[in-house]
Length: 91
Image (cartoon, rainbow, N blue to C red):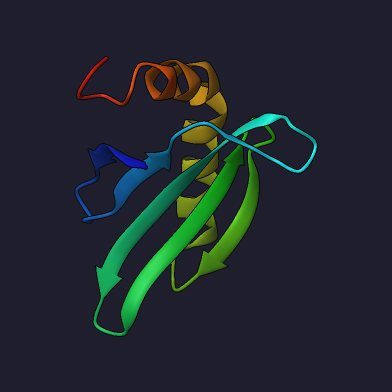
């Protein structure tokens, strides 16, 4: 399940998954940053807790991606907490 997190002024929407298990049995969450463009979407997907980029497509600048990475890194405990609680609607 995907949970809404926030929407930035440039129309970038941030959503995140429920807690999942990777192939090693570790708990992970995917955080998606996405905005609509005339050509489709700009997208960046991070994985927690590593904060590594899993997917990047479109025209986000390196500066925008660095900001997203900071949001993800600083929010790791927060994302896990709200995922455990069923999303912001429940938190």
